[in-house]
Length: 290
Image (cartoon, rainbow, N blue to C red; front, side):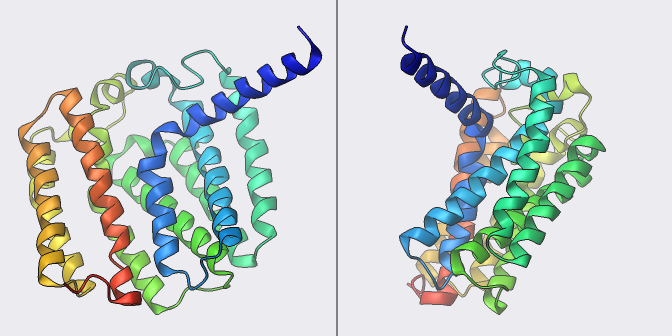
């Protein structure tokens, strides 16, 4: 086999490995964050969008590598295709990659602005307390870490896309709404992973309160949908549609409880989450008044 062929094969293997690190978080994080930035940024040219996508993806890779350094034992059950449990990379090499990515992401952020650099540094702090200090094993602290992670991603992506050094009032309100949504609902991702989480000793809400957590989702998703519709002054039809989606997701979570159904419900939840990040468009463009 020629040197070029070996090099290409090796590059494709590495590309597949980094894609597998981030595979499960495109729908959960990358798409909502980029949607958030697109809705709120006054600048939407292709170069700026490409820069924002690169910034978010590299930081997502950093966060995933950090988290998966510690989650290999539960990933054997929940996500065996990930690079560590599938044997594509060792835990030792994963940890080394994590710190290299931290340095790279800080350097990348420094090319934009001080506040983007601060966002990157704060994300690293969130990863350390979530992964190294074990806050991921506590249901409330885990959600707080998720809030911090989403907030830093959204601030950084919006600043990179807009070319500004600060967020305006509408962006700040949208950030607060996003933080509330994440804190109150992001454990929707934990229902399908309960078996692996239980094996690892992680105390997620579906494990601590298996019945109460489903009743909670049934109630909180429609109520949050109604509150967000009011905050962003949606029109009657848009409000009905958004609240209905929240109700359907909550109802599915309550009624259908096996692992396969939980994964399907989580996909629908991500559609609802993406919609929640689209709502600030009504403050910018008045496009959801019908």
